[in-house]
Amino acid sequence: MRNNLKIFKEKDDILSLSVKINTLMKTNLNVINATIGTLYDDNGNLAILNDVKEIRNSLKDEDVYPYISTLGIKDFKNVLVDFLWQDYKNKFIKKKHIELLPTPGATGALNLSLYMTLNPKETILLPKICWNVYYNMAKELDLNVETYKYLDKNNKFALNDFIKKVKKISLKQKHIVTILNDPCNNPTGYSLTKKEFIDLINFMNSQKDLTFTLIYDVAYYEYSMENTREKFSLLGKLNKNVLTIITWSASKTFTMYGLRFGCIIFIDSFKRKVINLLNKAKIIARGRFSCISSEAANITYKILSNNDLLISFKNNLDVYKKMLNDRINLFIKQALEINLPIIPYHGGFFVSIKTNKVDKLTNLLEKENIFVTKNYHLIRIAICSLTYDQCDGLAYKIKKCLDKI
Image (tube, rainbow, N blue to C red; front, side, top):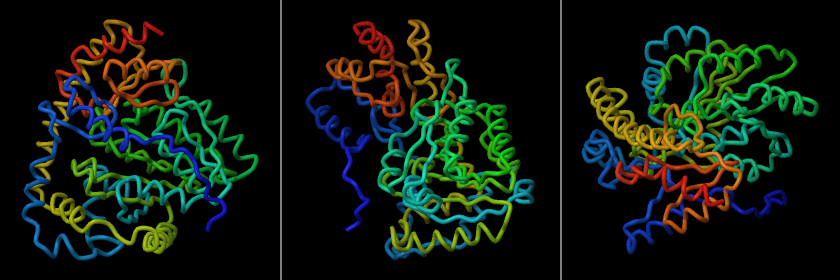
Protein backbone atom coordinates (compact mmCIF):
# COMPACT_ATOMS: atom_id res chain seq x y z
CA MET A 1 0.00 0.00 0.00
CA ARG A 2 1.27 3.49 -0.88
CA ASN A 3 2.21 5.21 2.37
CA ASN A 4 1.89 8.67 0.84
CA LEU A 5 -1.74 8.17 -0.25
CA LYS A 6 -3.62 10.05 2.46
CA ILE A 7 -7.34 9.99 3.15
CA PHE A 8 -8.76 13.46 2.59
CA LYS A 9 -12.17 15.05 2.42
CA GLU A 10 -13.09 15.66 -1.20
CA LYS A 11 -13.26 19.38 -1.85
CA ASP A 12 -15.71 19.16 -4.72
CA ASP A 13 -18.29 16.36 -4.75
CA ILE A 14 -20.77 18.03 -7.07
CA LEU A 15 -21.87 14.81 -8.75
CA SER A 16 -23.01 13.25 -5.45
CA LEU A 17 -24.65 16.50 -4.36
CA SER A 18 -26.55 16.74 -7.63
CA VAL A 19 -27.94 13.22 -7.20
CA LYS A 20 -29.33 14.21 -3.78
CA ILE A 21 -30.84 17.39 -5.23
CA ASN A 22 -32.43 15.52 -8.13
CA THR A 23 -34.08 13.19 -5.61
CA LEU A 24 -35.48 16.23 -3.79
CA MET A 25 -36.75 17.65 -7.09
CA LYS A 26 -39.03 14.64 -7.55
CA THR A 27 -41.19 15.89 -4.67
CA ASN A 28 -40.52 19.65 -4.94
CA LEU A 29 -40.91 21.31 -8.33
CA ASN A 30 -39.55 24.63 -7.04
CA VAL A 31 -36.00 23.37 -6.50
CA ILE A 32 -33.30 25.17 -8.49
CA ASN A 33 -30.28 22.93 -9.08
CA ALA A 34 -27.48 25.23 -10.22
CA THR A 35 -24.66 22.89 -9.26
CA ILE A 36 -23.67 20.72 -12.20
CA GLY A 37 -21.88 21.63 -15.42
CA THR A 38 -24.21 19.96 -17.89
CA LEU A 39 -26.26 21.79 -20.51
CA TYR A 40 -30.05 21.41 -20.30
CA ASP A 41 -32.67 22.84 -22.65
CA ASP A 42 -35.48 25.17 -21.60
CA ASN A 43 -37.81 22.24 -21.00
CA GLY A 44 -35.42 20.88 -18.38
CA ASN A 45 -34.17 18.04 -20.57
CA LEU A 46 -30.56 17.16 -21.22
CA ALA A 47 -29.41 19.10 -24.29
CA ILE A 48 -27.84 16.56 -26.64
CA LEU A 49 -26.82 17.50 -30.17
CA ASN A 50 -28.91 15.73 -32.81
CA ASP A 51 -25.77 14.96 -34.81
CA VAL A 52 -24.36 13.03 -31.87
CA LYS A 53 -27.61 11.12 -31.36
CA GLU A 54 -27.92 10.18 -35.02
CA ILE A 55 -24.32 9.03 -35.36
CA ARG A 56 -24.50 7.07 -32.11
CA ASN A 57 -27.62 5.25 -33.31
CA SER A 58 -25.94 4.43 -36.63
CA LEU A 59 -22.76 2.94 -35.20
CA LYS A 60 -21.98 -0.67 -35.97
CA ASP A 61 -21.06 -3.17 -33.28
CA GLU A 62 -17.39 -2.98 -34.26
CA ASP A 63 -17.48 0.79 -33.60
CA VAL A 64 -18.76 0.35 -30.07
CA TYR A 65 -17.79 -2.86 -28.31
CA PRO A 66 -14.14 -3.72 -29.11
CA TYR A 67 -11.15 -2.25 -27.32
CA ILE A 68 -9.66 0.73 -29.11
CA SER A 69 -5.94 1.42 -29.32
CA THR A 70 -4.51 3.47 -26.45
CA LEU A 71 -3.45 5.93 -29.16
CA GLY A 72 -7.01 6.10 -30.49
CA ILE A 73 -8.14 6.23 -34.12
CA LYS A 74 -5.25 6.47 -36.57
CA ASP A 75 -6.06 9.80 -38.27
CA PHE A 76 -7.68 11.46 -35.26
CA LYS A 77 -4.76 13.80 -34.54
CA ASN A 78 -5.01 15.41 -37.99
CA VAL A 79 -8.75 16.06 -37.82
CA LEU A 80 -8.59 17.39 -34.26
CA VAL A 81 -5.71 19.75 -35.05
CA ASP A 82 -7.71 21.00 -38.06
CA PHE A 83 -10.70 21.56 -35.79
CA LEU A 84 -8.85 23.29 -32.95
CA TRP A 85 -6.67 25.64 -35.01
CA GLN A 86 -8.68 25.95 -38.24
CA ASP A 87 -7.33 28.92 -40.27
CA TYR A 88 -4.33 29.28 -37.93
CA LYS A 89 -3.15 25.68 -38.31
CA ASN A 90 -0.56 25.96 -41.10
CA LYS A 91 1.17 28.93 -39.52
CA PHE A 92 1.16 27.28 -36.08
CA ILE A 93 2.61 23.91 -37.06
CA LYS A 94 5.55 25.66 -38.70
CA LYS A 95 6.57 26.78 -35.21
CA LYS A 96 5.46 23.92 -32.99
CA HIS A 97 5.18 20.13 -32.99
CA ILE A 98 2.02 18.41 -31.75
CA GLU A 99 1.27 14.93 -30.44
CA LEU A 100 -1.81 13.74 -28.58
CA LEU A 101 -3.28 10.83 -26.69
CA PRO A 102 -6.99 10.15 -25.98
CA THR A 103 -8.03 10.22 -22.31
CA PRO A 104 -11.21 9.65 -20.25
CA GLY A 105 -12.45 13.23 -20.57
CA ALA A 106 -10.42 16.36 -19.95
CA THR A 107 -10.25 15.23 -16.32
CA GLY A 108 -8.21 12.22 -17.39
CA ALA A 109 -5.93 14.51 -19.39
CA LEU A 110 -5.45 16.84 -16.42
CA ASN A 111 -4.61 14.01 -14.05
CA LEU A 112 -2.18 12.49 -16.53
CA SER A 113 -0.55 15.91 -17.07
CA LEU A 114 0.18 16.35 -13.37
CA TYR A 115 1.37 12.76 -13.02
CA MET A 116 3.83 13.23 -15.89
CA THR A 117 5.23 16.66 -15.03
CA LEU A 118 5.71 16.66 -11.25
CA ASN A 119 7.18 14.32 -8.66
CA PRO A 120 5.68 13.82 -5.19
CA LYS A 121 6.38 16.78 -2.85
CA GLU A 122 7.00 19.14 -5.77
CA THR A 123 4.78 22.20 -6.13
CA ILE A 124 1.97 22.96 -8.54
CA LEU A 125 0.93 26.61 -9.01
CA LEU A 126 -2.86 27.05 -9.08
CA PRO A 127 -5.17 30.07 -9.10
CA LYS A 128 -7.15 30.51 -5.90
CA ILE A 129 -10.30 30.65 -8.01
CA CYS A 130 -10.40 27.40 -9.97
CA TRP A 131 -12.18 24.09 -10.43
CA ASN A 132 -11.81 22.55 -6.98
CA VAL A 133 -10.93 19.12 -8.40
CA TYR A 134 -7.46 20.49 -9.24
CA TYR A 135 -6.76 20.40 -5.51
CA ASN A 136 -8.05 16.83 -5.22
CA MET A 137 -5.69 15.73 -8.01
CA ALA A 138 -2.75 17.45 -6.34
CA LYS A 139 -3.48 15.75 -3.04
CA GLU A 140 -3.87 12.35 -4.64
CA LEU A 141 -0.46 12.76 -6.33
CA ASP A 142 1.12 14.04 -3.08
CA LEU A 143 1.93 17.45 -4.56
CA ASN A 144 2.35 20.71 -2.72
CA VAL A 145 0.08 23.54 -3.84
CA GLU A 146 0.99 27.21 -4.15
CA THR A 147 -1.80 29.61 -5.10
CA TYR A 148 -2.02 33.04 -6.70
CA LYS A 149 -4.89 35.47 -6.99
CA TYR A 150 -6.64 34.67 -10.25
CA LEU A 151 -8.23 38.12 -10.45
CA ASP A 152 -7.05 41.38 -8.91
CA LYS A 153 -9.22 44.00 -7.21
CA ASN A 154 -10.23 45.34 -10.63
CA ASN A 155 -11.36 41.90 -11.84
CA LYS A 156 -8.38 41.60 -14.20
CA PHE A 157 -5.97 38.67 -14.48
CA ALA A 158 -3.57 38.98 -11.53
CA LEU A 159 -0.30 38.61 -13.43
CA ASN A 160 1.72 40.39 -10.74
CA ASP A 161 0.68 37.87 -8.11
CA PHE A 162 1.37 35.03 -10.56
CA ILE A 163 4.91 36.38 -11.04
CA LYS A 164 5.38 36.73 -7.29
CA LYS A 165 4.44 33.11 -6.67
CA VAL A 166 6.59 31.82 -9.55
CA LYS A 167 9.59 33.51 -7.93
CA LYS A 168 8.70 31.94 -4.59
CA ILE A 169 8.47 28.44 -6.06
CA SER A 170 11.69 28.93 -8.05
CA LEU A 171 13.67 29.17 -4.82
CA LYS A 172 13.14 25.40 -4.45
CA GLN A 173 12.44 24.10 -7.96
CA LYS A 174 13.42 25.38 -11.39
CA HIS A 175 10.52 23.81 -13.26
CA ILE A 176 7.19 25.60 -12.83
CA VAL A 177 3.97 23.74 -13.58
CA THR A 178 0.70 25.67 -13.65
CA ILE A 179 -2.87 25.11 -14.86
CA LEU A 180 -4.72 27.81 -16.76
CA ASN A 181 -8.42 27.17 -17.38
CA ASP A 182 -9.16 29.52 -20.26
CA PRO A 183 -11.24 30.62 -22.06
CA CYS A 184 -14.46 30.39 -20.05
CA ASN A 185 -12.92 29.79 -16.65
CA ASN A 186 -14.72 27.43 -14.32
CA PRO A 187 -16.18 28.76 -11.98
CA THR A 188 -16.32 32.38 -13.20
CA GLY A 189 -16.81 32.47 -16.98
CA TYR A 190 -13.86 34.89 -17.17
CA SER A 191 -11.44 34.75 -20.11
CA LEU A 192 -8.05 36.38 -20.33
CA THR A 193 -7.94 39.21 -22.85
CA LYS A 194 -5.50 38.93 -25.73
CA LYS A 195 -3.19 41.39 -23.97
CA GLU A 196 -3.38 39.49 -20.67
CA PHE A 197 -2.56 36.24 -22.47
CA ILE A 198 0.38 37.78 -24.34
CA ASP A 199 1.69 39.36 -21.13
CA LEU A 200 1.62 35.94 -19.46
CA ILE A 201 3.45 34.41 -22.43
CA ASN A 202 6.05 37.18 -22.41
CA PHE A 203 6.74 36.68 -18.72
CA MET A 204 7.33 32.93 -19.09
CA ASN A 205 9.52 33.55 -22.14
CA SER A 206 11.62 36.03 -20.16
CA GLN A 207 12.55 33.54 -17.43
CA LYS A 208 15.65 32.05 -19.04
CA ASP A 209 16.71 30.17 -15.89
CA LEU A 210 13.35 28.43 -15.51
CA THR A 211 11.34 25.93 -17.49
CA PHE A 212 7.55 25.94 -17.51
CA THR A 213 4.77 23.52 -18.23
CA LEU A 214 1.59 25.39 -19.06
CA ILE A 215 -1.33 22.99 -18.64
CA TYR A 216 -4.00 24.74 -20.70
CA ASP A 217 -7.46 23.48 -19.74
CA VAL A 218 -9.82 24.35 -22.60
CA ALA A 219 -12.85 22.28 -21.58
CA TYR A 220 -15.35 25.07 -22.35
CA TYR A 221 -13.60 26.77 -25.28
CA GLU A 222 -16.47 26.11 -27.75
CA TYR A 223 -18.75 28.22 -25.56
CA SER A 224 -16.49 31.27 -25.59
CA MET A 225 -17.56 34.68 -26.85
CA GLU A 226 -14.09 35.36 -28.26
CA ASN A 227 -11.98 34.02 -31.13
CA THR A 228 -10.55 30.97 -29.40
CA ARG A 229 -8.59 29.86 -32.45
CA GLU A 230 -6.62 33.11 -32.43
CA LYS A 231 -5.78 32.51 -28.77
CA PHE A 232 -4.62 28.98 -29.60
CA SER A 233 -2.35 30.46 -32.26
CA LEU A 234 -0.67 32.67 -29.64
CA LEU A 235 0.79 29.54 -28.05
CA GLY A 236 3.19 29.58 -31.00
CA LYS A 237 4.88 32.59 -29.40
CA LEU A 238 6.09 30.53 -26.43
CA ASN A 239 9.84 30.03 -26.27
CA LYS A 240 11.69 26.73 -25.99
CA ASN A 241 11.64 26.90 -22.19
CA VAL A 242 7.84 26.41 -22.14
CA LEU A 243 6.04 23.12 -22.78
CA THR A 244 2.32 23.44 -23.45
CA ILE A 245 -0.10 20.66 -22.58
CA ILE A 246 -3.67 21.25 -23.77
CA THR A 247 -6.37 19.26 -22.00
CA TRP A 248 -9.39 19.04 -24.31
CA SER A 249 -12.89 17.73 -23.66
CA ALA A 250 -14.88 15.95 -26.35
CA SER A 251 -17.44 15.13 -23.65
CA LYS A 252 -18.45 18.80 -23.29
CA THR A 253 -17.80 19.86 -26.88
CA PHE A 254 -20.14 17.17 -28.22
CA THR A 255 -22.63 17.09 -25.30
CA MET A 256 -21.85 13.46 -24.45
CA TYR A 257 -20.78 13.94 -20.84
CA GLY A 258 -21.08 10.33 -19.73
CA LEU A 259 -19.11 9.00 -22.70
CA ARG A 260 -15.79 10.01 -21.21
CA PHE A 261 -13.51 11.25 -23.97
CA GLY A 262 -10.88 13.96 -24.13
CA CYS A 263 -7.25 14.38 -25.14
CA ILE A 264 -3.91 15.34 -23.68
CA ILE A 265 -2.15 17.38 -26.37
CA PHE A 266 1.62 17.99 -26.16
CA ILE A 267 2.98 21.10 -27.90
CA ASP A 268 6.66 21.99 -28.03
CA SER A 269 9.38 23.45 -30.24
CA PHE A 270 11.20 20.10 -30.36
CA LYS A 271 9.68 17.18 -32.26
CA ARG A 272 11.66 14.58 -30.32
CA LYS A 273 10.36 15.96 -27.03
CA VAL A 274 6.67 15.61 -27.91
CA ILE A 275 7.25 12.12 -29.32
CA ASN A 276 8.99 11.10 -26.10
CA LEU A 277 6.13 12.56 -24.07
CA LEU A 278 3.59 10.68 -26.18
CA ASN A 279 5.46 7.40 -25.69
CA LYS A 280 5.65 8.02 -21.96
CA ALA A 281 1.95 8.93 -21.82
CA LYS A 282 1.04 5.77 -23.72
CA ILE A 283 2.82 3.56 -21.17
CA ILE A 284 1.29 5.38 -18.20
CA ALA A 285 -2.19 5.39 -19.74
CA ARG A 286 -1.99 1.67 -20.45
CA GLY A 287 -1.59 1.05 -16.73
CA ARG A 288 -3.96 3.74 -15.45
CA PHE A 289 -7.01 3.51 -17.72
CA SER A 290 -5.99 1.27 -20.66
CA CYS A 291 -7.98 3.02 -23.38
CA ILE A 292 -10.98 5.24 -23.92
CA SER A 293 -14.52 4.47 -25.09
CA SER A 294 -14.59 3.19 -28.68
CA GLU A 295 -18.11 4.59 -29.01
CA ALA A 296 -17.12 8.13 -28.03
CA ALA A 297 -14.01 8.06 -30.22
CA ASN A 298 -15.96 6.97 -33.29
CA ILE A 299 -18.75 9.51 -32.79
CA THR A 300 -16.20 12.32 -32.51
CA TYR A 301 -14.08 11.14 -35.43
CA LYS A 302 -17.08 10.76 -37.75
CA ILE A 303 -18.11 14.38 -37.08
CA LEU A 304 -14.63 15.90 -37.34
CA SER A 305 -13.69 13.98 -40.48
CA ASN A 306 -16.88 14.74 -42.47
CA ASN A 307 -17.29 18.35 -43.59
CA ASP A 308 -21.09 18.13 -43.91
CA LEU A 309 -21.44 16.66 -40.43
CA LEU A 310 -19.01 19.22 -39.04
CA ILE A 311 -21.02 22.11 -40.49
CA SER A 312 -24.23 20.60 -39.12
CA PHE A 313 -22.59 20.15 -35.70
CA LYS A 314 -21.48 23.79 -35.62
CA ASN A 315 -24.92 25.03 -36.64
CA ASN A 316 -26.66 22.93 -34.00
CA LEU A 317 -24.15 23.95 -31.36
CA ASP A 318 -24.80 27.60 -32.22
CA VAL A 319 -28.47 27.04 -31.36
CA TYR A 320 -27.52 25.75 -27.93
CA LYS A 321 -25.00 28.56 -27.43
CA LYS A 322 -27.71 31.13 -28.17
CA MET A 323 -30.02 29.39 -25.71
CA LEU A 324 -27.30 29.55 -23.05
CA ASN A 325 -26.40 33.17 -23.85
CA ASP A 326 -30.06 34.22 -23.58
CA ARG A 327 -30.12 32.87 -20.02
CA ILE A 328 -26.77 34.42 -19.15
CA ASN A 329 -27.76 37.82 -20.55
CA LEU A 330 -31.02 37.78 -18.58
CA PHE A 331 -29.26 36.85 -15.34
CA ILE A 332 -26.49 39.44 -15.79
CA LYS A 333 -28.96 42.19 -16.76
CA GLN A 334 -30.98 41.61 -13.60
CA ALA A 335 -27.86 41.21 -11.46
CA LEU A 336 -26.47 44.57 -12.63
CA GLU A 337 -29.80 46.27 -11.93
CA ILE A 338 -29.44 45.42 -8.22
CA ASN A 339 -25.63 45.68 -7.96
CA LEU A 340 -25.12 41.98 -7.36
CA PRO A 341 -21.31 41.56 -7.28
CA ILE A 342 -20.79 39.25 -10.27
CA ILE A 343 -17.40 38.47 -11.81
CA PRO A 344 -17.08 39.55 -15.49
CA TYR A 345 -18.43 36.81 -17.77
CA HIS A 346 -16.97 36.03 -21.20
CA GLY A 347 -18.45 32.61 -21.92
CA GLY A 348 -18.99 29.10 -20.64
CA PHE A 349 -21.43 27.34 -18.35
CA PHE A 350 -21.07 29.33 -15.14
CA VAL A 351 -21.33 32.76 -13.55
CA SER A 352 -20.01 33.62 -10.10
CA ILE A 353 -20.96 36.01 -7.34
CA LYS A 354 -18.36 37.38 -4.96
CA THR A 355 -18.92 37.06 -1.23
CA ASN A 356 -16.82 36.66 1.91
CA LYS A 357 -19.70 34.78 3.52
CA VAL A 358 -19.84 31.73 1.27
CA ASP A 359 -21.13 29.24 3.85
CA LYS A 360 -23.79 31.59 5.22
CA LEU A 361 -25.01 32.50 1.75
CA THR A 362 -25.24 28.92 0.51
CA ASN A 363 -27.12 27.91 3.68
CA LEU A 364 -29.65 30.70 3.17
CA LEU A 365 -30.05 29.80 -0.49
CA GLU A 366 -30.63 26.14 0.32
CA LYS A 367 -33.47 27.16 2.65
CA GLU A 368 -35.00 28.74 -0.46
CA ASN A 369 -34.38 25.50 -2.41
CA ILE A 370 -31.59 27.13 -4.45
CA PHE A 371 -28.48 24.98 -4.70
CA VAL A 372 -25.13 26.37 -5.86
CA THR A 373 -21.49 25.37 -5.35
CA LYS A 374 -18.83 27.01 -3.22
CA ASN A 375 -15.47 28.37 -4.26
CA TYR A 376 -12.86 30.81 -3.00
CA HIS A 377 -14.80 33.90 -1.85
CA LEU A 378 -17.57 33.23 -4.33
CA ILE A 379 -20.50 31.01 -5.21
CA ARG A 380 -20.79 29.39 -8.63
CA ILE A 381 -24.09 29.25 -10.48
CA ALA A 382 -24.41 26.69 -13.26
CA ILE A 383 -26.66 28.65 -15.61
CA CYS A 384 -26.18 25.83 -18.11
CA SER A 385 -28.36 23.49 -16.07
CA LEU A 386 -31.25 25.93 -15.54
CA THR A 387 -34.14 26.87 -17.78
CA TYR A 388 -34.72 30.43 -18.96
CA ASP A 389 -37.68 30.71 -16.59
CA GLN A 390 -35.56 29.56 -13.65
CA CYS A 391 -32.98 32.23 -14.48
CA ASP A 392 -35.63 34.95 -14.55
CA GLY A 393 -35.59 36.52 -11.08
CA LEU A 394 -32.81 34.28 -9.72
CA ALA A 395 -30.48 37.26 -9.24
CA TYR A 396 -33.12 38.96 -7.08
CA LYS A 397 -33.52 35.86 -4.91
CA ILE A 398 -29.75 35.62 -4.39
CA LYS A 399 -29.48 39.34 -3.58
CA LYS A 400 -32.26 39.00 -1.03
CA CYS A 401 -30.33 36.23 0.75
CA LEU A 402 -27.06 38.17 0.47
CA ASP A 403 -28.63 41.22 2.11
CA LYS A 404 -29.67 39.08 5.11
CA ILE A 405 -26.07 38.29 6.01
